[in-house]
Amino acid sequence: MIDAPGPWGTGPFVLADGISTLTTRSPQVIMEPNETYWDPARKPTVRIVYDNSLSKEEALAAVAEGKVDVVLDLTIDEARRFDGRGKASVHTKPAKTLLAGVFNQAKPNSPWNDPDLRRAMNQAIDRKKLIQQGANGWGTEMPAFIHPGRYGADAGMKPYALDVEAARTVIAKADIPNHEVMLLAAPEWKGVVEAISADLKAVGLTVKPDYSKTELEGWDIKLVWHFDWSPQYPVGVVHREFFGKSGAFRSGEEDAGFDALYDKLLRTPHQPAQEQVVKEVERYMFDHAKALFLFSPFNLAAVSDRCDFTAYDTCMSELAETRIRPTPG
Image (cartoon, rainbow, N blue to C red; front, side, top):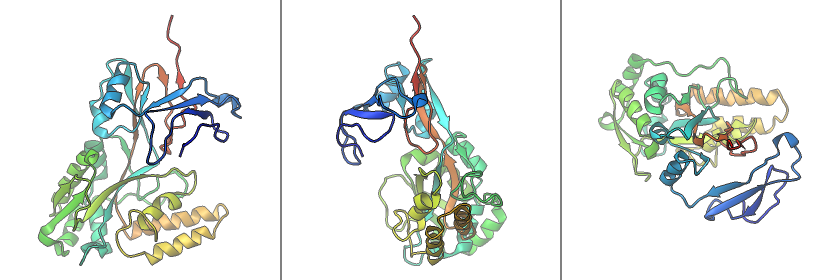
């Protein structure tokens, strides 16, 4: 939260003008280089102006015309349609993000309290096709919530394998009224929903999508995008939000198994023991199919050709490594 002029701490920039909080943003926020920044190799040389007065459409038009340098957080469709006309391009960055389906275990007589059914739903999804058709290839497969090779990832875990016959057998016996599934999602995930719908149709389910951003009563699955901004604590940032006692995305009773592992993690401060507990948490999520595990969407940005832009896999926009190339002549 930035709510007064800087300097702020020891970062590469100081706030010169404007305000940016969770609830309030001024039309412009101006950041000047911090002349006393501690790292000379990353010391900025240009000011940054965040223009909050432009709509996303106006901002994309401006970057294509060379009037704006960076537009962050593009949706898949926006990135697909973007035409920089030789003055800008789309930058893609694998990131510590996840897109997963939350099963509604809180509704009366919820079928999603059955772990076998949740596993079958995961076996019904062709994740490679989902990424290609639903996300234009801009995504990374992962078994649960942690990317392969990152802190806490279990090298022995692989994504649920596509098994249409096994999924169909379990789903046919499940108490899903009319074999219909209501799937809630933000409009930007329409392509993903369509790919999921095709996979679920193959195992005997009809998907009823809703993009209204209203949590309708009786929903079955809700797509949630989230990200891990922590260097080495994904359970605190991601898993807790989905399954913890105070989790923002949890839909159902508290999970005693998860809570016990989380308490164990909090009592394990030293490496490498802590990472082993993180792996236990990730394995628990996978073995119990606690979510519909999908993929990790890339960070997408429109960037002018005069700008050397560095994206962060944590979804943060520090911009210290970003440089503006001198104009020829």
